[in-house]
Image 1: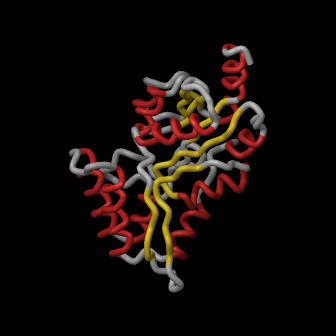
Image 2: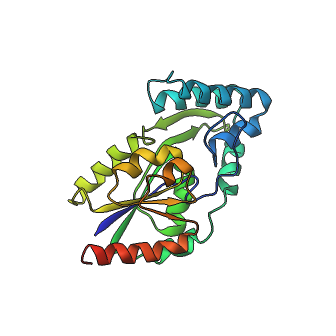
Length: 230
């Protein structure tokens, strides 16, 4: 058995929002700022500038700054889940992953985005392992009251994969990764087999394979099984 490790935003779900002045497309983070208005958009873009200038100690600190924007401009539970519910799957994602042989591949989601979005895919596809960077906790009035954070983006994704390989008693080469963004470059370089899905140019340069449609995944999985003796 191997782990089939999947990114969420931009891979399982389409990224439909990219604020001017940012480097990364987004399914949820930037869409929230867009919904909260021009002041929130300006502050969100400023956090990206600080990240690019190495002004943050790590990903959690960057998220805390962004969450403060959401609190400051009144993100409500209804608005948040409306954005989650309207996120659109990439073409053929659900159909393809439902056909993956689970005796050969255990699916694992690792996301720098929201736990709530990943939970949609878990329910629809039958995925039992997920690490997501942020989970929101709303009070009885629908106000953002607290949150749970994990450093599982950029280089941090690798740590969570090591944890799951250890849990399943798998070797360091018993996994492959599918992602889309520049933030997936570190994990693609580390992965024994990496697949760029409609990849950012930086990811395309380092991925083992690059695909435009999830249906192409079957040919790669079959090739992988053949090359490693099934």
